[in-house]
Structure formats: C-alpha cells, structure tokens
Image 1 (tube, one colour):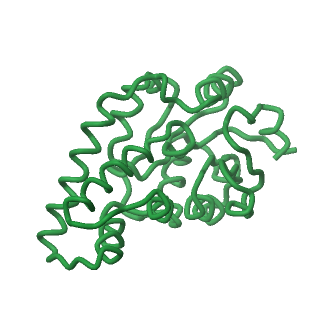
Image 2 (cartoon, rainbow, N blue to C red):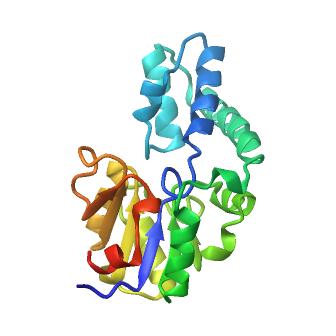
Image 3 (tube, rainbow, N blue to C red):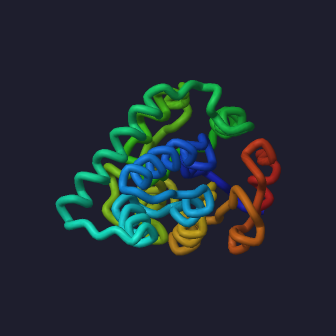
Length: 216
C-alpha cells in the first residue's frame, strides 16, 4: 500500500487519441513527396519527436533533403496537424479519462499533464479538460525527450510532490522508461507485451480506479 499524492498523464493515447491526425498529416506529406506512409509505419513513430519522425519517414521513402528543407517540411506537416486538432471536440476524449481525472481531484490527488506535444494546451482547451489539471508540462517547457524523465520530474516539482509519490500514465515504451528513471510508479495504457515494465497495464483509463491506484 502506498500513499499516492499525484497522477501525471501523458496526453496522446492516454487522454485523447491525436495519433490519427499525426498519421493523416504525415501520410499527406509522404504522398506529396511521392511515396506512401502506412499505419504500420505510424506505429513506429509513437513517442518520437517531430524532427526524428521526419528523418525516419524520409529514410523509409528514400528521399534526401537538406536541413533547411527538412525544417520546412516539418513545419508544413505541423500546420496541417494543428488545423485538424483545431476542430477537436470533447467527444474525442478517450473512454474513462475525464471520469478518472475527476475522481482523482475529488480524492485530493493532484494532477499534471506530462506530454512532449507543443500543442497540448490547445487540445485540452478544445476538449474542455484544462480545468482538470493543476499543472501542464509540455513540449514548450522541456528540452529532453522521453525516455529522459525531465517532463515527469518537472511535473512532480511543479506540483510540490516527491517523485516516489507520483503515478505516471503512459502508452509508449519511452514514456514508461522515463517514469521508472524518474523514480515513479507507472501505469501502461496498451499492450502488456509492449509495456511490460509498467507496474500495471490496462487497455484504457476506463479500467482505472482509485482502489487500483492505492494498491500499486
């Protein structure tokens, strides 16, 4: 039995699923460059930064671009992505996410967002979830990508709690590793085969409860 004072949530694949928009934007870019980009390819980009994602996609397509051209392509892809998430609604919150966030807050457990996304504030705003987070640490506030624990440690620090008193919710291997490196417990959202290092693995936050939280 542990005393948990805070929950830190990744955004993509945990609270909302914006992977479909990333996929559509990358696919459009690949198609314009003359090759295809599949959902299977997209799976390999989970938790990977925009710059690195572009490098991988260009490699897969056998396309070489200068650093300046790569920057322009990444910017164009992001603009398409932002245009799409600008039309998000509360209907796109993943099952159980809002309910569990509310349960945490009602129980006096602090909540933070720990996401690499630089568009997280817009997504929280569009889905009506902003008020359910005490702290938002996103890609605008960190310099190191997961599996570095920076994003989660900054979240714990901003909440004023010890890392050992935090539970992280993550859907990517790099995120699970980051939480463990940061000295936190972690709940994996997804497949036990992939996220086996987590303390607990669930299909979604709809399977999470305060009882499970306190038994981690």
